[in-house]
Amino acid sequence: MTLITERQSAIHLLRAGQSVEEVAATLGRSERWVRKWRARYETEGWAGLQDRSRRPHHSPRRMTEAQRQAIRTARSALEAEAASGTKLKYVGGQAVRTRLKEQGVQPLPSKASIERVLQEAGMTRPYQPSKPSNVHYPHLQASQPQEHIQVDIVPHYLQGGKRAACFNAIDVVSRYPSGRAYAQRRSVDAAAFLLRVWAELGIPKYTQVDNEGCFSGGFTHPYVLGKVVRLALLVGTELVFSPIRNPESNGFVERFHQDYNRHVWEDTYLSDLSIVQHQAERFFALYRQRPHSRLQEQSPATVHGQPRRTPGYIQPASQKRPLYEGKVHFMRKVLDDNTISLLNVSWDVPHAKPGQGVWATLVLRKSGAKLLVFDAAPDTPHRKRLAVHDFPLSEPVLSRPEKPARWTSSFLAKVARLARPWHDVLRVSSVVNVLFPGTMS
Figure (cartoon, helix red, strand yellow):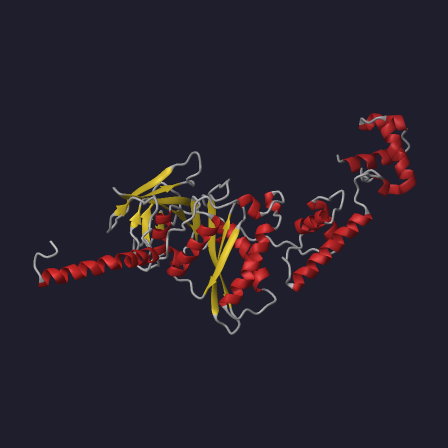
């Protein structure tokens, strides 16, 4: 019996002629309880038997109308700034709270209270959750800035229909972003962008990318180790390839794409890449300094700090780089035949289940290369090895130099200029020795 039916039963028994004492004994309740609900029924009828709100009639912390008006005004001002294109386009509860804090509103309402006021005022949009994947993939659990960076490309079209490939990157802990637009998505563009990212954000433990040909090295040759893989090995970051057709595994940069699209491309026509970059740099500068809801209202710039390791001595290469010792990782789904596909080759994983997400690591050493498959990411305390395969190589693996690629073209040109006088002396000496044997000995 529910509380409502119990109260109704008490009224039924009273109306049938039983006394308060008899009803209390029948229902196992106190006489005071019976008299309370009899009084409610006599004054309000059956509706009086319903539960009432226990919220106090007066609360010293209850939001005042002045605070509600300040919230609505702040939201309206943020919407106007977003439409003008002069400021960032964030208008949610966190952005409103930051604006109220800047205005000195006290007491400062919580984000939940602000969103409740905005919802009551009809100033919010319904949330549309994305459909989750039915495959659980192992994933990294970064806890420090400059540990894990995600990189991805979002396509756009310039005025006139010309396509632009917009590369974006973000640190998953500090939310510090970087980006650049290119005319194409070639491996040389991907390598140039990654050098830019590592110079701005620092060289992380892991750099995560998707499976596009510009990152992976293409889809034709088996065992391919492309330009970006070789560059990552040289720099000393461990490249991580996301699962195939699973954008949520690269979720931090995917969500950042939405902010980037909104602030750089919406409500405007961009005619060339220089204008795109100018618009993007302005957005990046503002984004890096804004308080972030996931950072306890600190800015990405504050949390990220200065880059600890950068590849300033490495230049883009026109020739194929050698292979260096290091690791390359792949997040993959086990297919129905108990194999995974990576680097254009199928690999058996007999101890895994079809449909299972696994973590594969290619380990490159001077003694050779092996592909190891696990049930969890490398930063997981306990994980199970599911398969081991030899990985064939047609070239040697070198020890990674401490300061590679110092012999840049500019440095060599300087050496050539310094050596030119001595070259001239040696050339004159040769001529003299030919004409007058033994003179210069």
